[in-house]
Image (cartoon, rainbow, N blue to C red; front, side, top):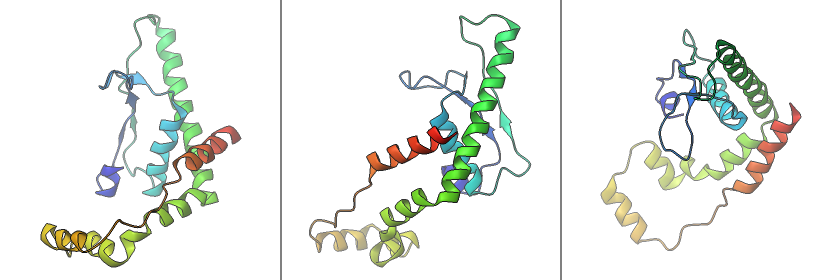
Length: 156
């Protein structure tokens, strides 16, 4: 997402790790939710251009046959393909985009717009914050979004 926002996403290092370890263990991606998030970024930037997916992954210790490597590639490619179909449905439906637009609407007006446009620095923000009370509350609707994503995943 960060690379895409900076206009620098040209290819995907398509492997993953165990979230409990905290580092990349070069596993083939089979988590549909990660694939959907990845494919949403790719679709939102209009594709990868000349780039592609690098399956820089390895078999796990219990997998020692060349057949295991074959199935690992197929499974990961299928996961990304399914993620692409789901991401397309999410974009087509527009519900999540509308929720995010509302959630981050303050970035498009008042002080938020000035921050986004780089028109204020820390000194101005310090003065602004000290002149305000608690900010308005705007729910991120995390549970609703998670359930909505589950609905999209269940469609395919």
